[in-house]
Image (cartoon, rainbow, N blue to C red; front, side, top):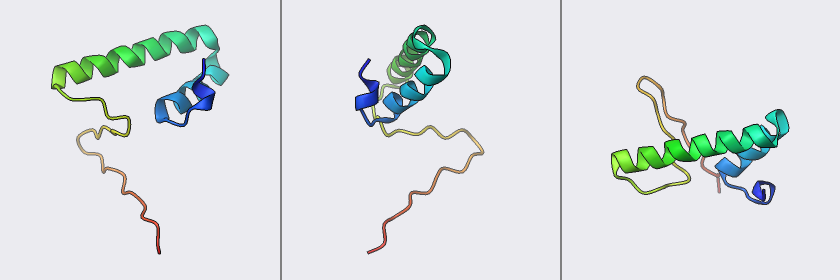
Length: 69
């Protein structure tokens, strides 16, 4: 896999998972994650946004830190 060469959130997640559980379990977990993403996109009629962060009811969304000039 080339996830270690990428900087997106899913690739970073996969690299950490590979270190913990091994290649075969990581492949199954990635397939599960992809299936859930595709299902959510189709069910809600949205386009894929790699920076999307879901917020559960009652949670406070993270506040982005702005760089000071």
